[in-house]
Image 1 (tube, rainbow, N blue to C red):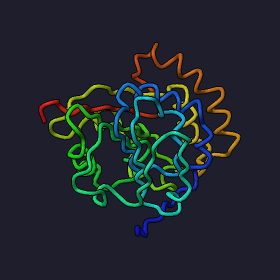
Image 2: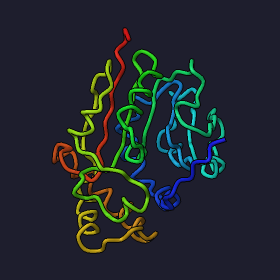
Image 3: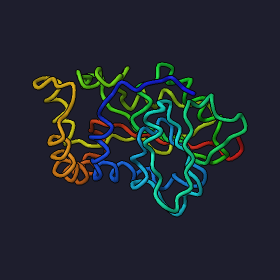
Image 4: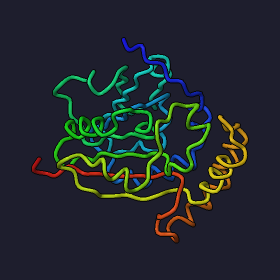
Length: 233
């Protein structure tokens, strides 16, 4: 049994940001199929956004036992909850898609983590990362919930594992970037309030959904990437 304990307290708040989850999920859904693995699944708040008829089974990998116990799968979706990390999975387990949603920035050896994840992908499988963007936005909130870094397009792409081809790399939530910059420079909060999350999700995300494509997905407070394993690997 893992003795890992997650230091953040924001998972419950962000689980209610349904517009945001559906927004970033729409970019990943074409690659989300077959047997999938969600690394650092938290309390299991991504089922509604990513679940589809193309998913055959879903493995939630979560190192914090207390969080793992809170995961509740929707009816009809075959879900397995595993307490631990990649190294704790059976050696021969493989997947069609692996997701790190706001997880990679917590991992010290991010390059090694992605290399190990890619080794567990089947040919044609996809490795997906959603992460907070731009180190200049690193705030008290990042520090409070255990973020080690934020990424930009270059730093995230530099982690590409061998044998993987880039399929998607873009920034999301250009309007939200203004709020993050305000928190970094003015508010300096270590935790957003429920009302702030609700305002961002209800009013700011719809603006970003319209603005991001106009900006060519070149601006945003989050960065998203998809690599696909070569069919012959």
